[in-house]
Every structure is written in C-alpha cells, then in structure tokens.
Image 1 (cartoon, rainbow, N blue to C red):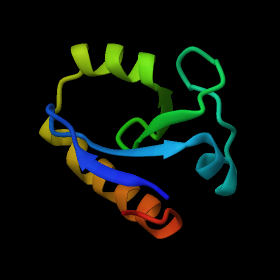
Image 2: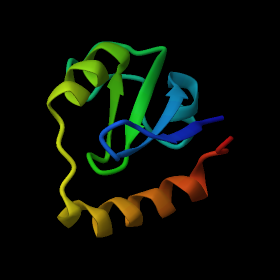
Image 3: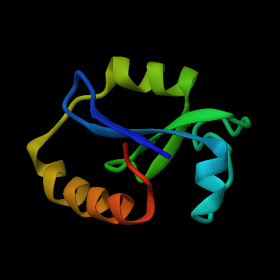
Image 4: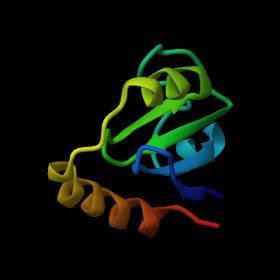
Amino acid sequence: MARKFINEKGFTVYEITGIVKIKFGGYRVCDSCNKAAVKGYLIPVLNGYLCEECYNRWIERAKYYEEYRKYEERKIRYYDNILEVV
C-alpha cells in the first residue's frame, strides 16, 4: 500500500515500503545513495525512489517548476494504476 500526498514544495509523493516497490518490478534501493531502504518515497517527477534521508536532503533544495506538471501528471496516472493508494 502507498500513501499519496503533496509535499510542501508542491510535488506529489508516494510513501511506500521496499516490499511494495518490489511488487511492481523495482528493488528497494535508494536511487540516490544506493542503500537498501525499508521505507522510502516514490517521486513521480523524478521517476525515482529515495530513502528517507535522501528525500529530506532533496526536499531542502527542490524547486517546483510549472514546466514539470505535464510529465508529473503522466507519471502520477501510471503510479496510481499500479499502486494501492490510500
């Protein structure tokens, strides 16, 4: 199961466990630091999975640009179809 939310910068994010990531064909490895992540964040605009530590570092410097919206919306539709969103 995944918890979907919009973070303080305006990005849509899914909080998921590594087990959920494995179910749709991924590994539970952070795309930034390459460490195993029992829990992490799937970020559609990045099309990536970050551990909690890397997510917190990313959100500090992230800036939402309106030009991202179409790409992000396409990825959100994709993830909504494959994840059990709560």
